Length: 232
Image 1: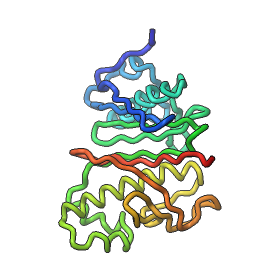
Image 2: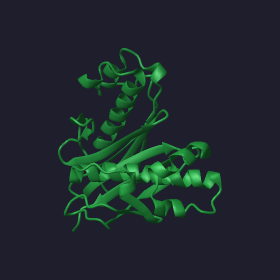
Image 3: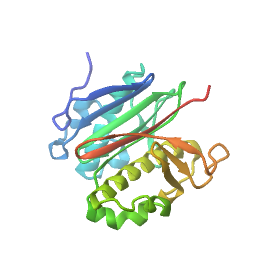
Image 4: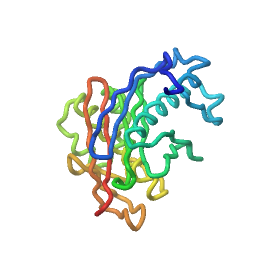
């Protein structure tokens, strides 16, 4: 018998096997329903650094770990990710993964480290055209801006949201490998299914490297991910 139950602030989980040794788990969360006993019911300990956080942040943490435990179980691992000093998840030995949450939805992708090199996952609600127009130069390179020519405001906004999400996934995938922070103008989407580095991050990840990504469009959001298999 498990020693935990699903708190009222969390929905049932959805599980997907994306590829061999690569799993995605998602759930919905409601910060307004987060109670004093929610963490105890879920069998999850709130990290000390979040003890004074607002309810939304606590609910995000709870939902992310709730999904992560279920995803790790698919790899035969009974455990939870910890928290590194930079607030990124510290995955159990032999595993790697990524957590994202947006507007009441938490999603996790985990992988068997024997077969996978890195994973990055991000979800973003579709940015409206007005906000997209304000963000274009902050998030997109000149090359990407030129590719928007002739598109309607809504098409431009949707393209920006997708690239924004893909670049977030790229950072989550490469930062653990390189230890270097990089920004939106350090990569460009030249091909539909890949991002190209415009800056050398390490000897293994030089300028010009193409990193494939995938995405899934939904009614209210887009989900992107990067999952790189280990070289054989």
